[in-house]
Image (tube, rainbow, N blue to C red; front, top):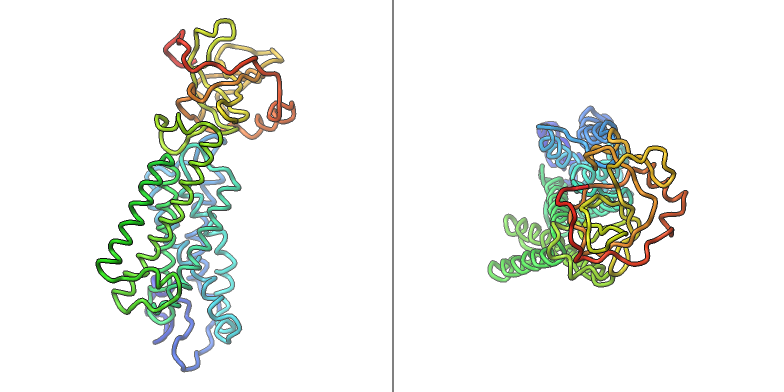
Length: 398
C-alpha cells in the first residue's frame, strides 16, 4: 500500500500494495528496504511521540495548535497503511514472496506502535484516557485493520493486485474505530445506544433495499463485484462498529445501574459520568458544621460506590505547614485548577447528585502519595454522605 499511494509507478504490473505479486509470474527479487517504508513509519509514529514527550504536566493534553488536525489526518492515513502489513504477512506466510520483501517485516514490527500513535491522537480531551485503556484501544484498532484487510481479500476485493485497495480496507476500519471512540467518549450511554441502534438499523435498511450483503463480507463469502463489492465491504465495517458500540453502551448502562448512578446520568455532560477514582470534579460540598449550607469547590475522587463517592476536598485557603493538607502548586496543576490550592486529607462521602463538572485527573505523584498514606484503600471518613439538596453558601467556585 505504501507505494500504491505514494509512488504508484514504482510497482511492476500486477504487484499489490506490498509489492507482493498477484500473478502467476515469478516476481523479481526486491532491492530491499527503500526510503518509503521508514518515511511511512515516521509519519505514523513520530508526530505523536514528539507531542507526547513535550506535552507538559499531567492533567491536560498536549496542543499542536493549528497543526493538530492535519497531523491527526497524517497519522491516521499513515497508520492505516502500516497496520495493513500484518495482514500481508498472514496472507503470504510460508511463501517465497515474504523472502523477496524484507520491508514487510520492518513495517509489521512497527504496526503496534502506529496503532498506539493513532489511539493517542484520538483519545478523549477530558478526562485523559488511562494508559491501560489506551493500549487496549490500540490493540483493538490493529486487530480491526488486519481483520478488515483479510475479510476484504476473502470476499473478493483485489487487495493484492489493485493499487489502493489494500490500505483502503484498513483505512475504512480505522475511520470506523475513530468514529466509535468519538461517540463513546462524547455521549452518555443512552444516546450512544440510540445512535448505535440507528446506524445498525440504517445499514440493515440499505442492505435490504439495495441487495448489498455486508454480512457476506464478514463471513468471508462472495458479495458481488465492483462497486457492489465495495459497498458491501463498507456496510460490513459500519455494521461491526455499530454492534461494538451497542455492546459498549449496554456495558456502561449496566455499570451505572450497579453503582446507582443511572438516575443522575441524564443531566451530566457527555460520556464522563459517573465520577471515577483519580478524577477532579467540581461539586456542591456541604459544610461539616452545618449540613444545610454548602460551597461549590473542587474535589478529588478517591473511591466510587453505590450512591456516593469518597472524595478529598480542595481549598484555596493557605494551609502551608499543616500536616492535614497537601500543597497543590498551581504551576503543576494549572491544567486542572485555577488557583494555588491545598488538598485536605480527610475523606468525605459525597452523593453523586452533588457532582456537576469534571476538570481532569490527579497528578501521579499526588495519587501515589495518597496510596502511601492509605487513603485510596480506606481512611478517616465523615459520618454520612453529604445530602444533594443542601443550600449553597457561596455561588462562586471555592
